[in-house]
Image (cartoon, rainbow, N blue to C red; front, side):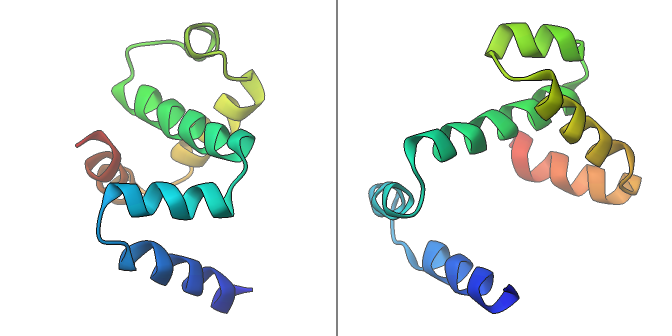
Amino acid sequence: MRAEWDSVLEKVLMQPDQQSLIVLFELLLTEEERSAVAGRLKVFQMLLQGEMSQRQIAQEFEISIATITRCSNYLKHMPESQRAEIKQLIMA
């Protein structure tokens, strides 16, 4: 399965602009899947900011507690260096 994911990443990286990425993601992902990805990104951003509780994030952004808990557990179990790298990637 790794080869297939690498192919997806190649196609994403080949896109010259935002409009091309939109077209590609509309082809590959349903509206629900795109919304889930955007929600997950928002959860990681909010958790890394540390200004809101999980319950507040759920209420504010209408994201399930289960999703927030999964993201939180993922962050808790990664090395600090990796957490810092992810923070730099998604908070910029």
